[in-house]
Amino acid sequence: MKIIKYLIIVLLIGLSIGVLGSQFSEKSKVKSFVNKRVCLSALSPLMTKPSSLEVNAIKVFDSNLSIQAARTRIKNKSYSEDLTDSLMETLEKNYSQNIPMKESYISIDYSSEEKLYGASRSQFICVFVTNTFQNFELRSITYKNKDHTNLINLYMLRDRPERLSSSFEVDKINFVDSIEYAFSSFF
Image 1 (cartoon, rainbow, N blue to C red):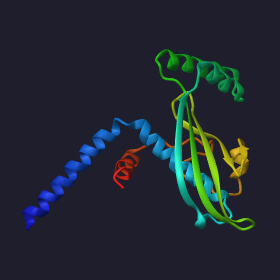
Image 2: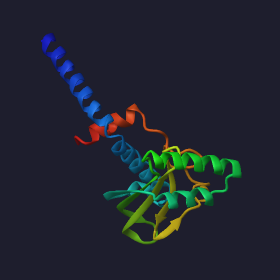
Image 3: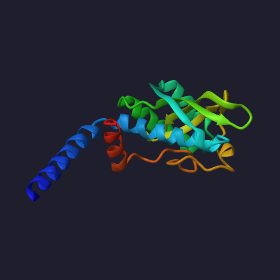
Image 4: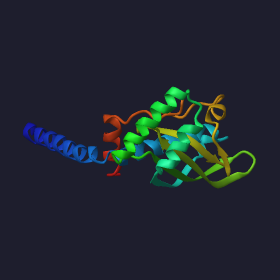
């Protein structure tokens, strides 16, 4: 009986290592998985009755920013001139090495109970953009057909979405994220 238990444990460990090994090569999929979780956690504090949230579908659309769009994005931020020059250098270096900035759109089709409207179905959209250091930032959301870009004011009196810094940068992916992603694909 002990031998069977040990064999099962060894088999499970072997399977886990095999699955994780294949998942580490899919870093962009793990990032999308984490961004989906961040987007869901951004929706809940805005709802009048978060417990009624029922997700119907989640879609992810990824694209690369053109170098012109990336330059404009950096210029439009209120950085000091020295920092802007430094970021532009990093940006040029990244693009020359074929490492563009990326945009990720996550669309959540959901149903919920609202105090004034009763049962309703709607869409929530999160827009993530990588910064020059390839970390995703939540740039804007669309909730109840209204775009919100000033996220600091929007979440000031609410819980900030999980995994986001005070500048709305998504935490780096870690080992636990890879494990959760690996096992989520089985269920």
